[in-house]
Amino acid sequence: MQDTVAVALITSLSTLAAAALTGLVGALSTRRQLAHQLTVARQESVERRATRRDDLRRDAYVGFLSACDQAYRQLDRRWLEAGGSEPVPGYDEAYAAMRALDEAYNLVLLEGPAEVDSVARSVLTSLTVEYADQRRLRDEPGDANAPLRDRHRERWLTAIGVRTSRRISFVDAVRPVLDPDA
View 1 (cartoon, one colour):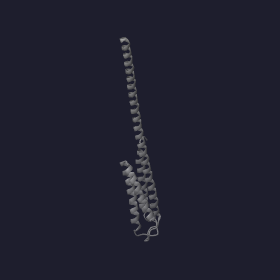
View 2 (tube, rainbow, N blue to C red):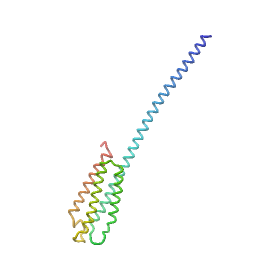
View 3 (tube, rainbow, N blue to C red):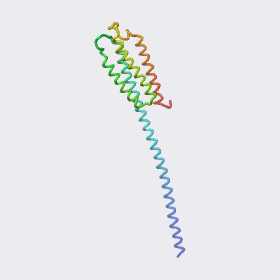
View 4 (tube, helix red, strand yellow):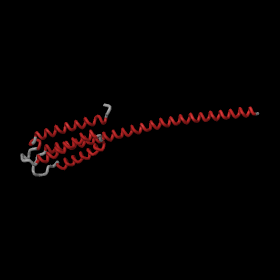
C-alpha cells in the first residue's frame, strides 16, 4: 500500500511540476510577446508624431510661400501704379498681404527648425524693406503720373533680385527638413 501511495504521490508531484513549468514558460512567452507589442506600438507612435510634425511643417512652409506670393503680387501692383498726392489704391491690399505674411511667418517660427526660421525671417525682412521703400519713394519728387517702376527702375530691379534670392534660400533651407534622406 505504501508503494501505491508513493507512486501516486510522485505522479501527482510530477504532474504539478509539469503544470508549473508549463505555466512559467507560457508566462515568459506572453511577457516577451507583450514587450514586443509595446515596442512596436511605441515605434508606431513615434512615426505618427514624426509624420504629423512633417505635415504641419510642410503646411506652414507652403502657407508662408503662398503668403509671399500674395505679398509679391501686391508689391508688384504698387510698383506699377502711378503716384501722386492721393492715396494709392492698392495700399490697403499691400498692407493686408504683409500682415498675412507676418501670420504665416509665425507658423514657420513655431514649426522650426531654427535654420528655416532664420531664412524665413530674411524673406520677411526683405519684403518689409521693399514695402517701406515703396512708401518712401512714392513721396519723392518726380513725375507723379509715372509708375514707381519707371521712376526708380534700379530700385525695382534690385527688389526683384532680392525677392528671388531670398525665396530660393528659403526653399533650399526647407528641402532638407522635409526630406532628410534626399
